[in-house]
Structure formats: C-alpha cells, structure tokens
Image 1 (tube, one colour):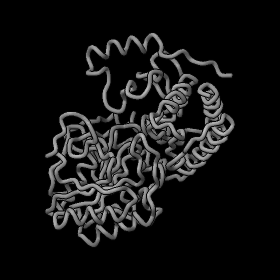
Image 2 (spheres, one colour; image 1 turned 135 degrees about the vertical axis):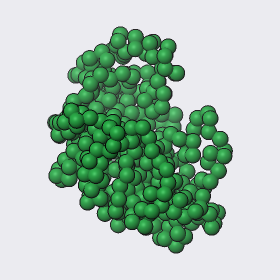
Image 3 (spheres, one colour; image 1 turned 60 degrees about the vertical axis):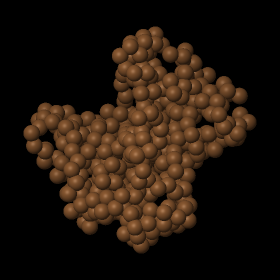
Image 4 (tube, helix red, strand yellow; image 1 turned 90 degrees about the vertical axis):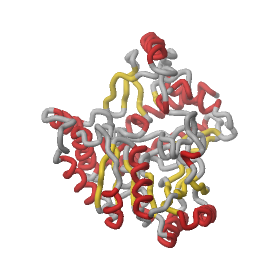
Length: 409
C-alpha cells in the first residue's frame, strides 16, 4: 500500500495565512482550492513532466496540467530552450518580435480554417475579440450562446459573480447544447440582429458530465450561420491542440469562421490567439484590441516551439492511448469496489462522477483520497492528460486511485 500523505503541510498552512492577509479570499477564481476541497494544496513550487511538487515538498502525479495549458509536460525541454533563448534577446520590446510572424505562419499552415492569426494573452481575450469582430463584420449585436457554457471571466459572458449587470449580457440569446431546434429558435428570437453563434467543441460545463458534440448539431450550426449571415465562432480555448491540431471540430468536417485559442497553445506560457477566414480579415483589422503584454516575445516563442513539437505527430496519439488506459483502469476499479461511476468526454480530457452523487460529496471524498495518495485531480472539473504521461505513469496513478476507491468504500 502507498503511504498516505497527511492533509496539508506546515508551509502550506502558513502560506494560506499570509495570503488571506494580502489577497482577497486568500485566492480567487478557479485556482481557489477552498471552493472544492479541504485536502488539495493551494501552492505549488515546481513541475516536471507529469508531476508537480507542493510547497511542503510533496510530489503529485498531475492530472490537471495547470488546468489545461500544459500539453507537452511541465518544463518540456524544447519549449524551455525556446523560452530561454528568447529571454536572452528580450521579451516586451518596443516593436513586435519576428517570432509573431513565424508563429502566425505556422498556425495558418496547421489549421485549415485559418487564413490569418492574431495574438492576445488568454481565453477571455480571444473569445471577446471573436465577438467584437463578428459584430464589426455584421453590424449586428446578438450572440447565440449555449446555456451554462463558459466563454471567459469577463462581464459580457460571466456565469456568476457580483458586479455583472443585466445590461452586460443584454445581447446574449441562449440555446441548449446539442439541441439544434433550440439554436434555431434562438436565432429566430435574435432576428435580423444576429451577429454570431458561439459554441464550444463539446459541452464541458463544470459540475455536470461532459457531452461530446453531435455531428448533426455541429453541421446544423454551420448551416444556420450560413443561412442567417451570422459568424460561427468556435471556442477552442479548452480543447484546442489536445483533440486535433486543425481544430476540435475538424474531424466532424465543420469549420468555423473564427476560432478562439489559448491554454495548450504555448505549453503554459500566457498566450491566446484568434484565427479566422479571409472574409473576416478586414473586420478584424477594423476593431481596436490591444494589451501591454499581448506582443511579448517569450510566449510567442513558446507557442512556436509547442506547435512545432505537436506537429511531429506523436503527442496527440500518446494522449489518446494513455487516456484510454486511465479510463479502462478506473472503470475496472469502480466495479471491483462496488461503485457505479460515469466517465464522460474525450479520454484526453477525462471527467469522472459517481452515480447518484448529486451533491458531489462522494466524488469530492474520492478526489481528496486520491490527492492524499499523490494524484492531483479535481472532483467536478474535467482533468487533462499531457504528452508527458507514459503508460507507466498511468499505471502508477491507477495504483493510487485504487486505494482511493478502497478508502471511500
């Protein structure tokens, strides 16, 4: 049996005390572990491959990958070398680094729906730029969004929180994911003021099972956009570069007009991107979007190195193989311990829930038992696999999750 790590170390607790004095709530946003666990560490000091180390020196097999940005593994040698090399020349300069052109060319060469690319810092920047471009191109205001879908932590699309007004979201019209009839009804409600249809490649809302896109739904949204003159925007921030390098709906034969990217495109460096079709080039050029750090060279160099590595063709199949190995192993363990579980979504972005666990108490207890045994995962947010996870790593994870099932049984 693997030794169980005592819950929360001395340095972790001391850092939390210090943080509460100078950071509202001690931490905020999705990184606030107090929102989902009493056992998960808040502070990490290092990462290497598919492992991370907390402030007390405890090591974890990492199934969150920085909540999605780390696709090749922490401190990937090729990406790290590109970062160090670019740092030696400079980062935030008075003009854009040539690496921006290099990376834009590589994106356009990789993504079939991309005739151009522009860069920003995160997913919220990217989705907002897409929406602004669509409104500029069409001269219209209404944006169709799926109920419960997350498109960023900014007022126009925020799902919760104080400070968001009805006026901020007055031009959103909602539909149900994978329900083409509801999307058609939403488009009819928007009428002649419909600017865009915004959709995620799959339904990955928190606290619910993931739901893959029905190909007929995806094709139907494409047809609806074509018929109404709306811009079809794919929010590929979470899924991008894990499922297909050409875009997550490329295997479905559905190409968007605009795509929002972030998370995995620079293996952990702060970077977002928008890619689009030629027909929207002028509209994109007409809007004003910028940021003090949007043109930083180091993340762009990391993005170029990341995509160069991904294009070698082994990373995505490796993630699919190890993800399937993890899913099969968890299924066997649940049966052996008398639990009924659901595993949903693509295997590269796994999600586990327990049948009948409506208040998430059982899955939270299981996730805490796993983290105490050195596996870092989340009770009600999807996990992420990286190319750094080997079969042996997954087997090590499964040894520990088996003990977690036994602990909560």
